[in-house]
Length: 184
Image 1 (cartoon, rainbow, N blue to C red):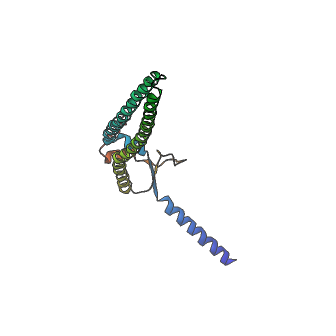
Image 2: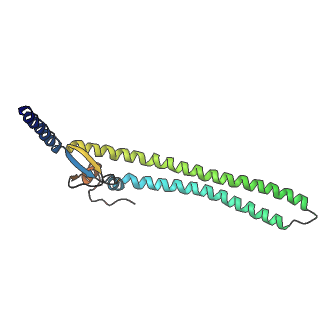
Image 3: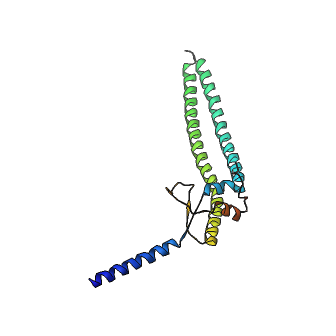
């Protein structure tokens, strides 16, 4: 019986010690989307990405215009077909059809390549911004002694009650006004 009581008090003491240790860990939350949106580099990156996208779109539209011209020419050629030139015009139409199919495939390939290049350009422009924001978040977290910092932007956190919002501190670390509106 005495051993049971001693074991109970030891277990209770360990449980109490664990709760006290957990209570000392500081928790905080932030919204990384607000931080990144407020960074001045984002506006520049978006401008560059839009210009890159417009250039790729212009290349594809040029190919589409070429396709439409060739299609119109083939349709006009078909209207000129008669019994006398049936064989000659038929061969020309076959050649034009093959060219149109080839051009259509090149357009599809150009669209797919443009999409891949846009994704690569997006990563090239925005990854350094993300790395910079992550470094500032880690620095502020260490400076303020937080054991855990939750990002409410990615909605991974279902519930939180209290904690310190360090979004403004991270913005300040990046040299951004705490009240700066997101750049668009």
